[in-house]
Amino acid sequence: MTKILTAKDLAIKVLIALAILAVAMFFCALAGPQKISLQKVFAGPASVPGQNTDYEIFVGVRLPRVILAALVGAALASSGVVLQAILRNPLADPYILGISSGAGLGAITAVLLGISWSFWAGSPITIFAFAGAIITVWLVWYIGLFAGKSQVTSLLLAGVVVNAFFSAVITFLISIAKSEQVYSTIFWLMGNITEKDFSVLLAGGISILCGIIALLSISHHLNALSFGDEEAQALGIDATKTRMIVFGIAAMITAVAVSLSGLIGFAGLIIPHAVRLVLGPDHRQLLPISAITGGIFLVIADTIARTIVAPAQLPVGVITAVAGGPFFLIMLAKYSRKVSWLK
Amino acid sequence: MNDIIELDNLSFGYSQNLILKNISFKVKQGTFLAVIGPNGAGKTTLLNLLCGLLAPQAGSVKVYGDDIKSYSFRKLAHKIAVVRQEFVPVFDFTVEDVVTMARIPYLGTFGFEGKADRESVTEALEMTGMAAFASRTLAHLSGGERQRVFIARALAQNTPVLLLDEPTSFLDIKYQVGIYDLLRKMQLEKGKTIVAVTHDINLASQYCDEVLLLGTDNSFYIGKPEEVFSQERIEEVFGVKISAGTIRQKKFFIPLGKFAKNTDTALPDTD
Image (cartoon, rainbow over all chains, first blue to last red; front, side, top):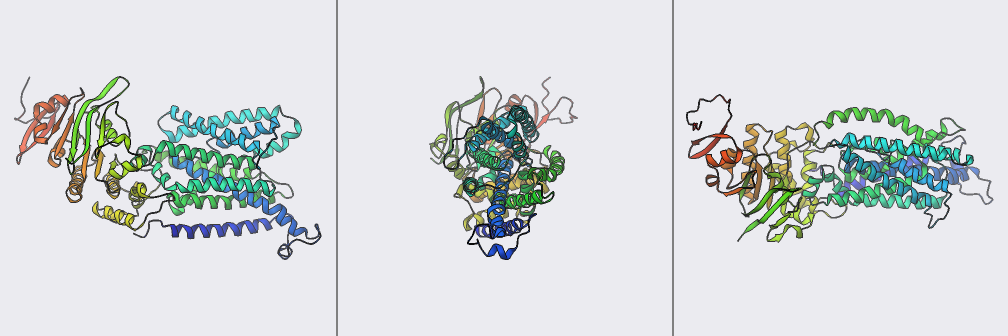
């Protein structure tokens, strides 16, 4: 009976995954239209600013962008993992369920209203995005409940409907917006990772990491919840309360990710599924490993997005959607067959 | 004085219809009680009241002398384990994963199983004969094997009380007897108190110490199977003709439909 997961096994796996993430981040930060020499990077900043441009590009431009990609990837993948568990639906994903577009609508409302107050690096955009995300979660959940017993498909349909509706509202808002705001907004909507200040990264990073750690602390309950409310309650879990907490945290980290980088689809779907194939469905390791793998995935996807048509740049959402769309269809076909014998 | 579960004037219903009305009974420690009745009599509702999933509209359920409402879900999971009808979970958990979940009520935050937890899991797998299947996923088991996995999980939960909801429906007769043998073994070797909802009158009277017969008209009878089960009462409660016979001093009941190919001379001809 050595197969039961121990904290030590998990720590080793997490460290290995983190090492791979670090290597990926390092090499992706080196890649780009502007060649960077390793030697110059390691030489440190020059005494006169502007002399060691290689170092300045690496630390000031590339590194923040790679860190942002890793954070957003981790947020979306862990949000996907926990949504799949509590909705008992392997096709759930913050983007597909409309949570991302809810957050996007919130964020875009804040931008277009020109609300500019801020406190502790928490911009109104993030607050609005969180409100949008949490409203969408409940909306989709209730429409899904009313729509029918087979939650696997009715939830997806509810997500599609909410998604379409919010997209229409977003399009409307953009069409009445001032023209100079439009271009950047559209790029942002497609999922765009750009260079951000370290303070923004720090605030975003702390909230995302806190969210993931909070989810991690109840990850063994997610195992039981994926069997349904009655089963979870028989194992001593308050299913209603736990689901509300998980919904709240998932909405929070999705909102932070969306306000940092716009709507990036399918990362929350592909990553958990791939990790589950390799390591099995135990959420105590599925969650942390998916978060790190999500980071690796988005760092690489973003590097492709900014180098493939260099010197121009693609929004990273294009790359993830091109990879994720067909993947989603395959999984939909696979699970629709399985659904008929689900409880 | 060792009543583990005590129902006092319990009533429950959905909208105005009372499904269960003024039910009172006690379950002594180490008893194997079967809950029997026609569809719609409220068997599963009763089970959900016993495991705290539903709250009674009137009356009370007491577990170890304390009102079930005073228990947290976690505390209750230390006393009562529940086995529902087997199913295939959404994700590909292995047999061992599922049985290990039984230890969740004993884990802290960031929960990982310790040595004692693993021993409980191993013992439960061995007792139910599922150790050889430990690394298989549930989708790759037959219905009877899956039911054993859920029973193994209940066993690993180390509770004095075990509730089961129709553990043998959809199983062939070999698995039905296998499950009841296993339950009886857990009762005798581990001193478990078992309450099982079932449709099978004959299996219940073969294996159980007491039966609770629920009627659709809020009637209920509780006692030893020999006392509760009589041809007239079963015909009345289930609304179907019964042929009763005796094999080795045990009474057996076989339902008789109108067009059943019937050559049984023991059939009382009432028409």
